[in-house]
Image (cartoon, rainbow, N blue to C red; front, side):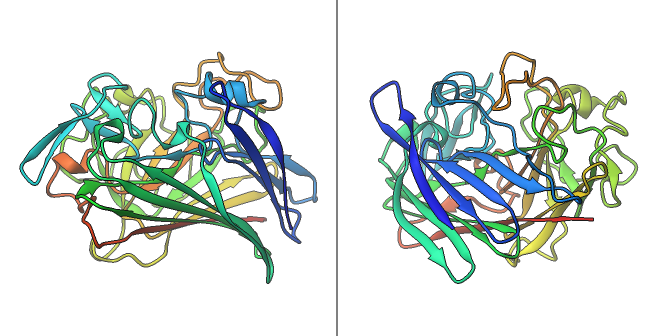
Length: 357
């Protein structure tokens, strides 16, 4: 089932709409057109009791201000994650982007896709699914990126308890594109404490270590024998306080894992992550066509943001699992390319699958 209602008006006078997707299994997903933000995901626990399992704000004004640096539930782009130095050279031209995360550009710059009001170009309902298609045309030079980027993002909830997110983009000038969704998950319920007891499995045997500014050093290191080995199910907090230099840099986990594909040319839909929360019995699977996934353990939540349930969000109270190409790829030619050329179509799919045990 699909419904909509007015959500509010931005500081510059743009109307924002909230869409609610509901399926036959008791799953409810709410999305607003500001930033394409997933504001709520209501999931039943093993006894059938529902709870919102994503972090978010109570109103639009808070999304525009308090969420602007934590990116609750939004579409991040044009380039998700970091670009070192905020610059890259493409086809002989150097592009200098705005620096909004120390010496780096993060999630597209000062006004990325998380801070625009998207148009709804299609409402989808029937055949056991409901969803919306969002559209945003980012002009040539937007945040100093080359090319006009014509972007569509579709959210689709089906009766198999799967939330499918499909990305599509085209450009009129060669550019770099890396899109994802930045939802923070807490399967016990938002605002109910840290996620350190959540049990995480990542289908990845390598990761990209970073410097003190969270920019990849270049190599794809093995996770074996490190706190980054989640190949077998492991509580998030089991090793997060160890004195590993990478954990010190990130104040916890904030790294890109290299998914265990046979090659970077493989774009089949694969299971990237599984998260379990024993108390509720809720399970989240993340499937993707992407080569990487950024696991962020909510390290910079500091209690200054009050969530949709009226509680302050503190360190570790949500985890993001961002399917993606690797950080700083425009400056790392050994990584799978994020370049998009005129005449090509950028596509990416991520599926969040929910159930209980």
